[in-house]
Length: 392
Image (cartoon, rainbow, N blue to C red):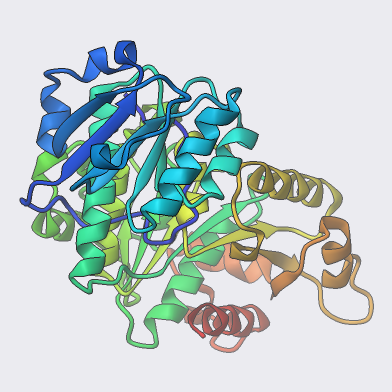
């Protein structure tokens, strides 16, 4: 079962695997809500649970939170007292990770709660396995930060619409980043149309599907056996051979996998599907940066604007979203320039990549990158400039 939509604005959202130390979890909710958590093995494996039965609007006594490492608090958005008590806990325990538990919340409510600095949002009625996964993620985040293990930057790239060139850009960008000596990994999460490995002339032996299915067996050694060498200095986690339903992704396993990748590499690029899912939006919200790729044409720009509005509606910080114009025309007679795109989208343009589609198609038909057949091109120069921006 997948997790509910849980948008985190913290780029350290993806965290290291669980540590063996026991943490104290306090769950504050109405007594009938807690019934599902009593004697739940999954929750007990994640932390030492302490269940506190309180009505949704009752204040949380300080002694109930004594020794807590993570706290889950039921919230009724329609009750001002309920919302106020979670703010009071945040104010009195500023270093304590707080998960809000609520039922049937809309995006606006979740955005309001997350702006209060919450660690995550859980779904009511409680699902012990889902809640355990969220608690493990938060516990491991704390452990990773305490151990001084920063996670590598993760840039998520998505297109305004299909066919705007995401795979082309992400492969060339990975090569540019790797040329500076960084260990770079491209994670192809376009589960229904991903072609990253094949664009590079590689046929993967293992795909990301095997890693998502690995469960507790997932470790650095298994990851190393699954990556495909691009032959250009960076690694690829290839998309599945068979089409995978987008809603079949287990969020917890995906989070664990990306955490591992970010600890094993210096820079991570993620290729997302065009169709947005709850897990895709979670990745966007928690990425170091989101690159939204569009073409300078009416239909792609319309779709790009809709996606920018989607990001805003679920609380993805606008300063983490960057628009990149692909297949831009340069010179006096360009049809739609970057300034015009910025005006239409009401969003700054981070970079423009020259239109050299004919040469790129020729290279891809041979399983090569454009610089391998044309050493100096405007597109290649533009991609190198984008790589410098992302690492500056």
